[in-house]
Length: 466
Ligand SMILES: Cc1cc2nc3c(=O)[nH]c(=O)nc-3n(C[C@H](O)[C@H](O)[C@H](O)COP(=O)(O)OP(=O)(O)OC[C@H]3O[C@@H](n4cnc5c(N)ncnc54)[C@H](O)[C@@H]3O)c2cc1C
Image (cartoon, rainbow, N blue to C red; front, side, top):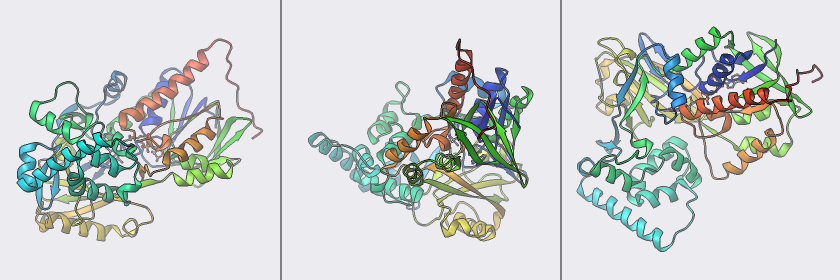
């Protein structure tokens, strides 16, 4: 096999790179381990009901990303109003917070405590400004301790399975991008003056048949431009020599084949990329790669005999009364996600592959989740018809304190390979949303095209000496 450019991983980042390169006439081969392309941004079908691997809203400031999505998605792109709630101690509170609603949800005493805690945190920070290292430091500074204890601590500990003092402030700063209790209150009282934090945006774009339509559209466009997208093709070895990647070994249907190329783009999980290199990196780099951990996700989608169960896009459930932390109902995102008279509730269980939950059999998980939905009062137990379980490895890069040094050690080592481009959320170990993942793929394609166009720079064909 040979490809001028080989792309490892067929998620949005890899496919966007493949689309740009194939469109510019480059010979492209994408290798994706799964049966389908799309990675984390896939849509799954279960008995006529469709769901994403956790609801995916598209928000972007990039005209290039927006144009690309509009070009490849062959169905209507809906403008969906965002409506999210936190289920706290049996009551629904709007998220982002609205003062009057929070007052009725938390009750007047807890609301006053939240406000007092917020003001106290502002004064304390002014008196003693210090570095915000952990998630706990960041949230207490920007929301006050009562809000941290009521919502952020239980939710974050459910998401990460770690104490909030062990999670880097980088995560929450990227995740909720400038949202503080102060900005939420200002936004609620005075409306959105200026752009406001992305998290508060009230509408988002969504393909009528699910977020997976973007990846499917990119795949079709790559094929139309004579690029090749190989699914069920797992990269098992990445061979290098003299500062260049020479070839990859790919496992396809029980057989291994090697593929040479001039340029390689990787969106594989960063630690996996380091481990697949042959010859292996120095032990210190491999040790750093082991310190880069991801949180996995287990989805249980329960099919219900009713038209709708909620009117929300997301419901956050921080409490210990459920094993899941977040819910979404795909029909609220697009009516085309389900059929008449039925709907799905999709419950996100944040966990690790080593947890007992990950190994629990699907039937038990569906039963347990249906019981929990009924106990929350969202459904009557008899309405639960059946369900499906999807296990999603590498869902969230875990920004544990110290991750930056580990990530720098790995990416510093990889930088020596002149023809290797590391892209994507899982690939770059960055908390990228879809638009950032797509942009990273487009930028790698730009770099390859610019290099090839530069006068006097010839890209060597790969040898067979590796
Ligand atoms: C629950 C959840 C909700 C989200 N919600 C949103 C949202 O609302 N809005 C938003 O913008 N973003 C959201 N995101 C983020 C979004 O999913 C990602 O930013 C984007 O999909 C990342 O694309 P990627 O190509 O970088 O990575 P991935 O999708 O992880 O792609 C990597 C690909 O590499 C493949 N691979 C791995 N190992 C191998 C191997 N050895 N050989 C071959 N292939 C391999 C994988 O199968 C995968 O397809 C969400 C993510 C999650 C987990």
